[in-house]
Length: 209
Image: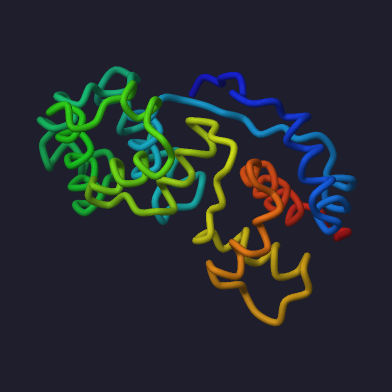
């Protein structure tokens, strides 16, 4: 998927969370510059998110390659996806459940209930409501769309286990934090909770922390 320019100033976001939170200040110092990558278009990103659900990277990539080969290596148009047979899905390694999710996505886009432009223009909560109407797409996927496709600056993915665990370790919590506790900790990060979330993910990659 093609990368896009982050639609807000990465340096401003980084400086804000450094100033707002002493714990985050140390994490930022160790991780380095804020370098979140924004990629793809909403339809493409959601289709790929469904394809990759509950699969390890190499297995998902192999299924993705076989699936795209059905369309000459290109992303299928919603009408093409809606018309794909069960046998074709199965032959590419896509489960019946995921095929149903993909068809639901295709139907929403083919009917005009969803389109890339409307999703890009909608506020965060509206985006979440719009895309979770698709079968198989939940809040976590919606948050990932906001963060990594739309580049929204103030997303806190409270359902992400990596964020929960990193926050537990960084803030010395006894257990994984609940959504309300996460929101309280993250309040000083506004309006750049996306940057802080990215740093919490990167924190988990540093064995010295």
